Amino acid sequence: MNVSNEDARESLAAVTETMLKTRRAVAAAYSSPLLILWGLLFAVANAVAHFYLKYTAVIFWTMAGVGWLGTFLVWWRLQRNLPVKEPPEEKTNWRIWAMWGALSIYVFIWLNLLAPFNGMQMHAFIVTSTMFGYIVLGLWFTAYFMVRLGLAVTATTLIGFYLLGPYYCLWMAVTAGGLLLGTGLYLHARWR
Amino acid sequence: MAELDNIIHQPVRLQIMSALVSLNSDEEVDFVYLRKLLGLTDGNLGAHLAKLEEAGYVKVKKTFVARKPRTFIITTGKGRDAFEEHIIALKQIINAKKK
Picture 1: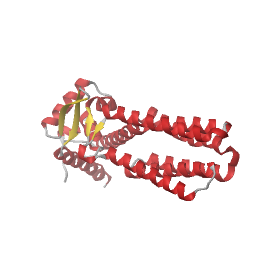
Picture 2 (picture 1 turned 90 degrees about the vertical axis):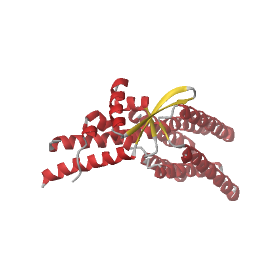
Picture 3 (picture 1 turned 60 degrees about the horizontal axis):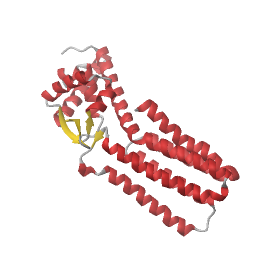
Picture 4 (picture 1 turned 45 degrees about the vertical axis):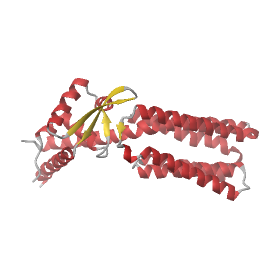
C-alpha cells in the first residue's frame, strides 16, 4: 500500500480531530444539561437573594430542591438515551452519586462544627466545596474544562467574599451563575 | 516496521475507528449517536461497519433499551491493535520523509 507523506499527515490530522471531537461530544452530552440547569438556578437564586435578603434560606433551599430534582430527571433521561454504554459492573453512575453524597455529608458535618457563621460564610463554603467536587470529577474523567470551571468559580467566590461584602450575592449571580450557564451553553452549542 | 491497514485506511473507516478508539475499550457507542457525530448516513455507516465487523475490528450489538431497539458498537482488541499499528505506520511515513 502506497501512501504519500502528505496523505499520512492528513490521515493523522483527521484521526486527532475525530478523537478530540468524540471525547468532547460525549463529555458535553453528560455535563451540558446539568451545567445549564444549575447555572440558571444559581444565577436566579443569587439575584433574588440579593434583593430579598430576609428570605435567603427559603430561596436557597428551593434552589437546592429544584436543582436535585432536575438533576435526577436529567440523569434518568440520559439513562434511556445514553450515547455511550459502559459494562454494568463499572457502576460509574453509582460512584458519581456516592462522591456527591460523601461530599454533602462532609460539608454538613463541617457546617455544624464551624457554627455559628454568617450567611455569606456558609454560602462561600458550600460553593467552594461543590467546586472542589467539579475539580475532582474533571480529574477523574480527564474533562479538564470541569477543572478550569471549578477553579474559576472558586476564584470568583473568593473575590466576592473578601472584596464585595453587601454585593456578594449579586456578584455570584453574575459571575458564578454566568460561568456555569455559559459553559453549559458553550458545550451544548460547540461540543455536542 | 509497522504496516498500514487497507481496511482502516479508507477515510470513513478511519474516522469510525478513531471515534471508537477514543472511548474506553469496554464502552459501546450508540449507532445513531455515532452517525450524527461523524455526519454520515445510515447506509454509509452501516456499510463501513459491516466491513470492519467482517475484519473482526468491531462488534455490532443489537439490544432493547426502554422497549426500543438500539444498536451499539464496540471495538475489539484486534481492532484496537490494528488501529494502533496503522497510526504507527502513518507516523513512520512522516518521520521517514523528515530524515
